[in-house]
Length: 117
Image (cartoon, rainbow, N blue to C red; front, side, top):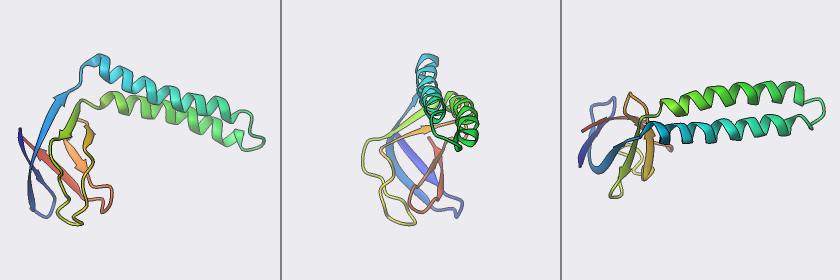
């Protein structure tokens, strides 16, 4: 599938990728992994003296926030060929999880791209 990635400076990038819609069970599995990891960190932080008053509530809150955010992810974008950022010319991630906004972010220069099928 041919996709067009456009950034806010009206620069366009043609790419080839697969846009896959995640099933509810896949979304739940991704969400539970993130929730469980942060919950395990919260339980592990109980044994850190003094800092556990700060770390345990932080990891508990993050477990819920990241769990719900991961469940909101609806699409997976897999590039079929190497795609480089327009601004910094570094490669974009091969597999990206997308929510309803269908935006991809370059990890190097932090430019946002809108995916247009």
